[in-house]
Amino acid sequence: MFFYTRYPSSNMLKMFFSDVKFNRCITSQLIKWFSNFREFYYIQMEKFARQSINDGVTGVEELSVSRDCELFRALNMHYNKANDFEVPERFLEVAQITLREFFNAIVAGKDVDPSWKKAIYKVICKLDSEVPEIFKSPNCLQELLHE
DNA sequence: AAGCCGCCTG
DNA sequence: CAGGCGGCTT
Image 1: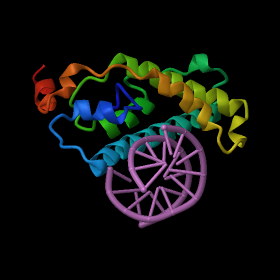
Image 2: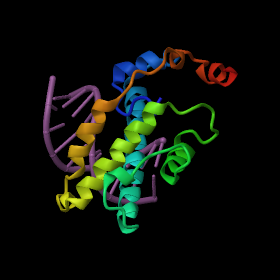
Image 3: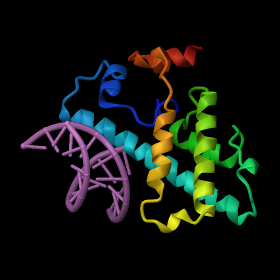
């Protein structure tokens, strides 16, 4: 689901995990999961952004996220370890936008501000996509594997 | 008081 | 990931 939405609302989670009987704990736990997912995501972004700068990249035009780049492999390894399904194209776009946001911010020296990432989060949270209906099924994993 | 976020730890 | 916690919003 993370490949589609980085900031799912609690209601959205309830919709997609219909087979789960929600209570305060379950809800906050799922919210927590996505929080952790985002954390890993942004850490990777910052890491690769800084790495590219050290590697001599001078402009965001030189930065792209494809299915065979290191950044993607790191993310896919984390969220889609078994490579169960095809990552949507949109995710690659969002990832690239995120990477470039970090790159520009760092180059502009904005990282001196303790809360410099906030601005980036504000941009990325608006890039969530709709999650396919299949994911609402309790057996979505099996169904996806049959495709 | 609740609920959620984000940062830090383990 | 889960725990713990401060901090902001409702």
